[in-house]
Amino acid sequence: MTELTKNKEPGEIAVVPDYGDVAETGFENQTRDDLSTPYLTLLQQNSPQCREEVDGGVAGARPGMFLNTATQELYDGREDGVVVVPAYTQHCYIEYRPREEGGGFVGVHEVGSEVVREAKTRAASFNRLTTGGNDLTEAFYLFTILTQYELPVGGIVIPFTSTKIKAYKKWNTRASTLLLPRADGRRATPPIFAHTVRVRSRMEENQHGKFFTIDLSPAVDGDINASLLPPDHACFVAAHALMKSVSAGEVKAAAPTGRDASASSLSDDTPF
Image (cartoon, rainbow, N blue to C red; front, side, top):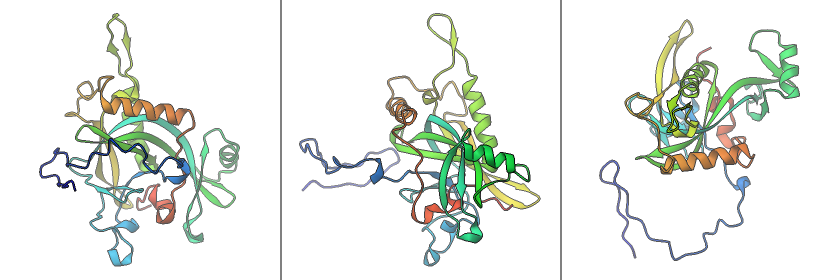
């Protein structure tokens, strides 16, 4: 039997058995329906995951940390954060049942959909949209490749709602307007999946109280040029492939299940 060893130092790869001679995996008959969409969510003081374990919380969860909703893995948010490679963006509206009616994720609607257009027409107040008694929340989904030690470890979706939207727009504006010289002398904008981005949490405060929001910055010392990946980098290749899958409709931000189906798992848990 091959001996398994644990990582002893950051960046050290664990020794695992070599499965190269096994042609079958047992996953051959599965589709996207067998999987749940991983979301990277930011925990707040009132997030259910921050409760005591006996009350249904996640062990070690604290406000300001990030949670992978598919694996329940926690990531530090205040110091190193997590590093991702963006692949695709989606502007949409998320439909939830009101909390007083039990809450729950209902679905995702495109910006130009009939549901959203009608909700905007009926809106009684700014940014307060409803449909059939449910709430509609504006969101920007950032489909990304989560990385570890400069290697891709899988796709994950970062939802930006409410106070988080400002950070998304600020980073996206910077990335989409970056012009770099090419070999032919012309200047061009690098692909979104050429960027490595560090995702951190940051404390903010307003008249309603303190809360965490997201901060996005170039992964390498805040330098956007130094944070660009070459086309042959494994993370670039993985993000490029994810972009193609999402744009072709093969990968979608599916509805979360279980306790991740609550509005608080994807929307802002800010104190207002």
